[in-house]
Length: 85
Image (cartoon, rainbow, N blue to C red; front, side, top):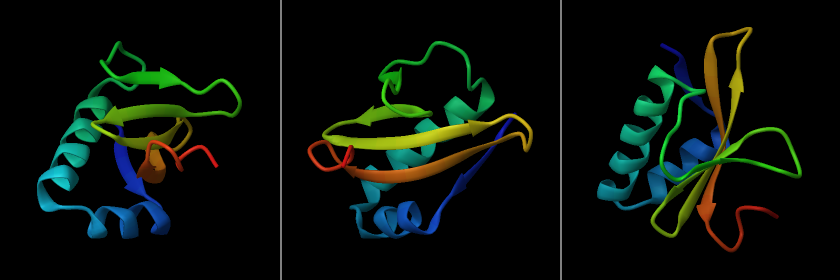
């Protein structure tokens, strides 16, 4: 199982979200950590940069899988319109 690590920007975004949405995001990331390369609903590989995108309602979670460190680094959590900027 991979460890899920949130960078400072992602952690701050989680703290500002409503509790129910933050819990949904953390739960989905724990599920992904069990099998990061398996098929997961609402997850797609990014085309323009390395990493993956998880859709949770109108929010997007951008993350990278770091095989050497056996962890998943959550880079950004933002609403759909601004996450790719």
